[in-house]
Image: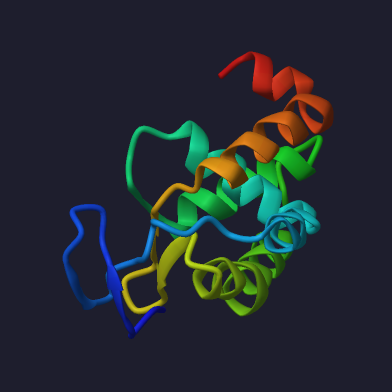
Length: 133
């Protein structure tokens, strides 16, 4: 989770706020979108109306996209561990989300460049899901 002083959406600075004036580099965008589960997280966050979501919702969403049937408890646990240990911290480090492991929440800050590429990726990767949302 971020602990630096950055500008927030209103231009204020303080702990936990983000600098949204600078877009991530193209290398960063493609690095973030290079992992399927990170893409699934971004698709979900872009599609939801809420700025903050709980991690259980993200895990359930990813499990539903990956499984043809109801995922096992073991699979759910592996997805959760993968998100907590790898993908959410990486998105947090890039300034795309605030991941709070204590409250099991993710706040999406939005990044137009990531959202644009994610939209194109979703149309290719998940045309049935994308078309229904």
